[in-house]
Image 1 (cartoon, rainbow, N blue to C red):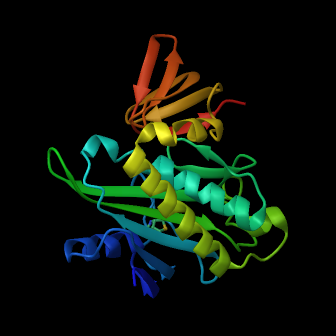
Image 2 (image 1 turned 120 degrees about the horizontal axis):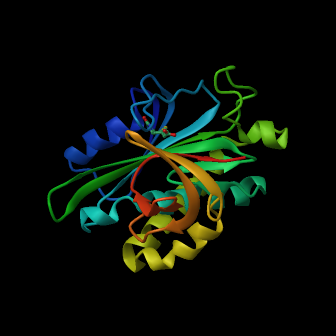
Length: 241
Ligand code: BTN
């Protein structure tokens, strides 16, 4: 079986990378009830209590070149919003590069890591943390985070949602790996909350503002700034109100 349930682990991404180095197969899935050292992007952490979240990592061995890895996150985000739509009937959206949001607040974060040499990816680990049954968040993140329970007013069956998520993320991964970015690009763009909006992007040391024109086929963000068109491969975006 390729689906592994862990009661407690440091981080499902770290565990999946360890398993990858030990030869675990393509599409292995690692799900944890509790993470003691959950990781977020940009060296941040990720925490959730027992029963509250879905925390999973999928190991992929796509055998393509490293430049194709960032857009794996696009496929993951599409899989997550599709599972949320099927199980909860909610239309969640995507905030580049990797957040699934609802009403301007974050529902799910995605952390994609890879190991590769110059011309081939050895493996990719795509980790997703979805806020499901939290009733509230600590004050420091209360204005940024939301859970499915807070939106619907109902407790969500995590087993059903988790099964739908495994199905839909793996099918979007396959679609992207077999048929390329064109097979998912329009759907990604039509679910983006920042396309056509005035945004601020903090990318490394620089902060820029401009109009989000769209995305490149490698997963970069394209912004029309006062100095011209700029592309960002990573960064933190906010929509200017
Ligand atoms: C982010 O929003 O910065 C990304 C958060 C990713 C969290 C998930 S939970 C499952 C997987 N294991 C981790 O340690 N992180 C990801």
